[in-house]
Image (cartoon, rainbow, N blue to C red):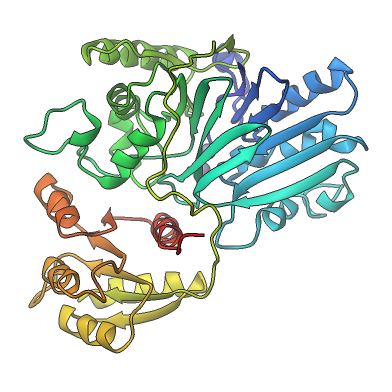
Length: 442
Ligand SMILES: [Zn+2]
Ligand SMILES: [Zn+2]
């Protein structure tokens, strides 16, 4: 399988003398399988030079599979300039997560409306199909493609492409689920020792991959003031990839404020950290034009999903109960979820929540940890003791970021654990991932 990076910059295209080496175009990576199928991760401005190369090849009709992790500008802005879409006879299958506000087709059409662009999406002559994805295993361009939700202030999917006995995993944009990676007392460096279920799931998703392409926009120092912005640091990526037995890691989505010297310094630090972890993982910072071939490895272990069979989600008006004794937080979260078209109930205490649940079982509980009288853990204990609420999904909201509290939350059986301060887009994306995972098996 051949891999080529066409766009490695995050947030906004950053051309200029300071970014000549690592590149100024936003996210776009090309994969070409041995059978000649093309899969493209994201359609940032890097899709423009990729399109020019495809057109120059002059091999007849062009057929591509475009995998969009999410639809923030830096991941879709190259699409209106993707020249193969302007030629009749070519075809593009576009895959991406269904956001809470409109289908993939509607969102892509939005950036090409008349005030922004002279040609509307539906006027493009190529045959374009749109595929809303959820978490699961899919067959795309002859490859086995697994998808999993990431932690970003938008509904965002990571992709694991398995073809030609090679696994390439694309995890952009994403930030750690927890400040603490390891559970206290557990041996660091092992997947089983990861504290937060979300980070452990993330590690399993990339396990044994030949190449992981991962967001590493910030340094650990910068990340302290950029929490909830949805991006990772090289130290998180190196530690989690080393635990997952990944062979090669490409750090990407470079910050627009980082020039070539700065990114080269990140690369040096990431490599030093990798060798300190005692692993063979080969870490580098992706640059535009970086191209290599991944040789088949028959010993590759295919990804096995934790919740197999949930590749299609039937979305309906879900009922969410929010429990918080802080009136401001209760009102803020309720308003945000109502805007996302959920049916929302509110409880100001644990006891009130249990009464509401006994009368009508919600699809999801958003539960505050620290409440006077009955705290979140006591509510969990009461729920898990009864067969009818034993498996009710619970997203715990908490200011308790320390390791013992996080561990206590998961040991009490929470589905997800979101620490304050959180951003509303981040919370709604996490709510959506929880709901996607509780679908009945199909
Ligand atoms: Zn981005
Ligand atoms: Zn983003």
